Length: 323
Image (cartoon, rainbow, N blue to C red; front, side, top):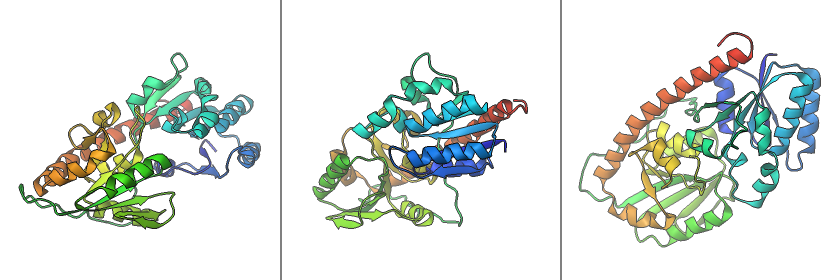
């Protein structure tokens, strides 16, 4: 077996899609700290096979340490696909799991970054060869068309449906978001997906985890997608999903988001601004945002395809098949 993808804990949608696009097997060892089961299963895996290249979904420090040690025992090439939460921490769990291990990325043969901005916090002097590969577009099993927004320029929007994917949002931020929407004096419903108990609090509906098709349909049915995170150096997968689906987007006003989406998104410095922004939107504003996002979506798809081709050439070079 030449190339494998390896993930501890939960497999990300990014890893699922990239492994399919790269036509390689992915091994997922679901576990929780201290990851003893994942460690043992990884050892057993490498007793059975000798891959030429291992791509690690880099989300947990113990996985980085384990695979780095195995690299020098089994003599394979190591690629770290560095997820932002490996370098940027929003809670004590992230600090304990990852901060002690981040310098180990220097032992990788290649590191894969999700955007250029995060390069600023990769430890200086410890960077192997790197490639930027933004998150891939969603893979559809069926054709789903987004609803069209009218071109009326002055008609005020009287009600809004918003969706906020929340996989990386802290409990503290969820509380702030619920409070912000509770104070809205307009007709707005916010659907929050992800790891939360199904319930309804005022005008906020927690959906829990959805199937891929349910999730995509929910995004496509929304007026706007809200992607909110307190990290300065990276964008979220949900924001790119919105872009690929050509949906209007509300995001934090950070350098990373502005570089990625240019003038195709609404930028807020604080989530509490959201209701006042919605009150000012008319159908023409939404149509303009959708048009700009459609243009940005096409460009992002071209960027991803170009970056993916480059990554394939790098893997070919590591595998001794030329570059």
